[in-house]
Length: 120
Image 1: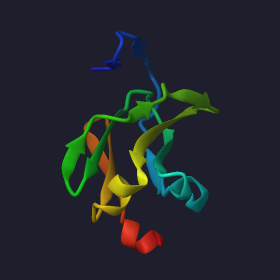
Image 2: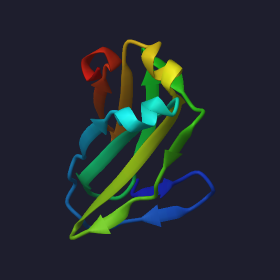
Image 3: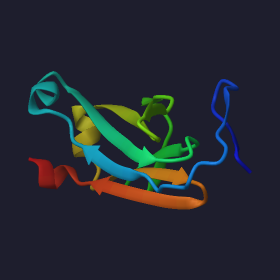
């Protein structure tokens, strides 16, 4: 189906566009932010069409629903982009081995993971 329902009941229908699987990039929190005991992970989802995407975050493979803030897709040329933010404390960030941004689009799933140990 070419119809998508986002949280809050927004319905978006895109017809007749070629399918393009999203490019997913995950960015770690900044060192400045960690000093303030905060950690925001950013998942950038770009180059996709049509516009319906579902974003899920996982810590060590377990779904996280709290502290997640995902934007509605915006049009960029003939493709779409969106971003999702995961807000944590620096302790939460350090206490897990991996964080994963899982993007589902048109039945395809793209996952990108980030490990706090690699970002020190």
